[in-house]
Amino acid sequence: MQPSNEPPRVGVIMGSKSDWPVMEHAVTMLETLGVTYETKVVSAHRTPDLLFDYAKSAAERGLSVIIAGAGGAAHLPGMVASQTPLPVLGVPVESKSLKGLDSLLSIAQMPGGIAVGTLAIGKPGATNAGLLAAQIVGLQDAKVRESVEAFRAEQTQKVLDNPDPRAE
Picture 1 (tube, rainbow, N blue to C red):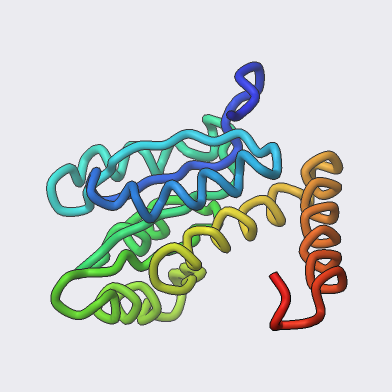
Picture 2: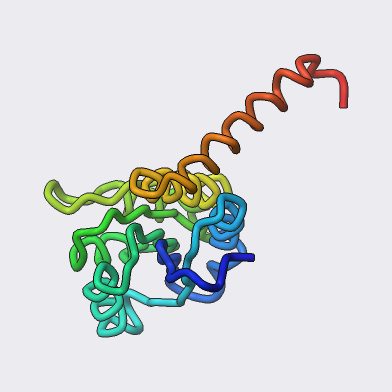
C-alpha cells in the first residue's frame, strides 16, 4: 500500500479498465519501492479532453513520470507524451487479435521529437515500467534510490543463493 501523506510522483494510466490486470503490476512495483502514485482510466479515443487535461496538468500536480498502458491502436502513451514534458513510459497491453504486437509497434513507432519509452508487452513490461519510473524518481529522491538499490541487491542475492537450476 502506498504512503498516503505524500502526493503522487507517478501517474499510472490506462486506456480502459480491462487493462488493469496488466497495469496493476506497475503499481505493485511502485508500492514495493515506496513510490507514491495515482491510477486512472484515461482513454485516448473516448475521453480525449480528459487525456489532454491530465497530461497538461501532470507536472504542476507534482508527477515526475507517467506510465501509460494501452492495447490495440495504443495511442494513449504517444498522445500523453505530446502534451507533457514529463517522461512517459508506454506499456503495450496484450490484444486478442495480435497478442500485443499491434500495441508494441504502435507505441514504439513514435515520430522523432515525441519520445515514449516503450517497455515489453504485458506483465513484464508493466513491472519494468514501475521499476524504471522508480529509478527516474530516484534521481531526485534518495529514499527511492535506496529502495531501488536494495531491490536490485535482493534480485542478485536470490540468484546467488540458488545457482542450481534443478533445486527449488
